Image (cartoon, rainbow, N blue to C red; front, side, top):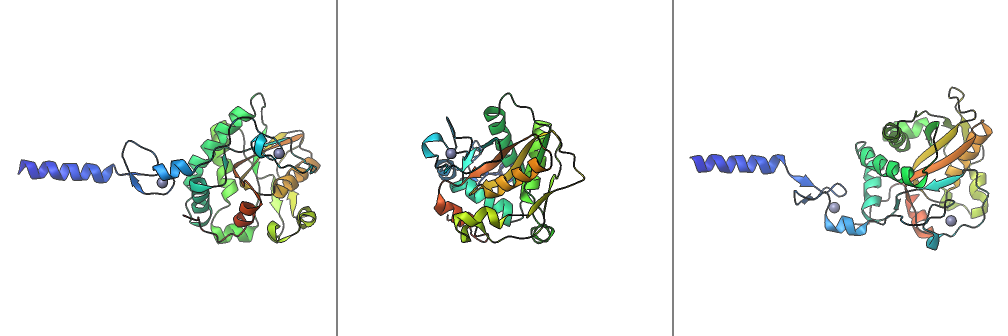
Length: 250
Ligand SMILES: [Zn+2]
Ligand SMILES: [Zn+2]
């Protein structure tokens, strides 16, 4: 009898303490946080970076665009387990994933923007229709959690007026034109003379962040810095990320 009881206890303990990979959700060794295949698929952005595109200097392919933000950084390239996690966060109604992603953004900002203080954190807005469809604006959730970690106020400084054609469907010359007048400053938020930190989930072409930064400057912000969870490594992934219904490729 005693033996059976022990087995049940053991069984219950195992059941209660099942450890799952934080990226893919597979059951894993209780002492680990993630599975090996996820760990191996993550591409962190390390070492010296180009603050215009946010990529490692050896991967920088900046083409001399006029940028309105001061600097941009992100902890990861958009690939593997990070890509899958962001996809679940955006399209599978898993708002709790914001906690982990925001922590990684915060770590990145503390190192990359050492010596800078920020007055305000804000995020790339979506239209009301989009929020209604998805249930939340993923950039807003990220920014709010991120702002709590950094202890900086977070406000919705921008408004998105209408939906735009996906950037990848347009030739490069038309990309910024596509965004003309899309964003405006939320008049209820005071951004004047403030150093603003602008958040989004993924940076693809950078046109959206740039347009948002421009709008914030026109609205009176002193400087805009950007941070995202991930950056697409090349044109191919840029095109994939903008197909919203794309599921992870593993
Ligand atoms: Zn995994
Ligand atoms: Zn660059």
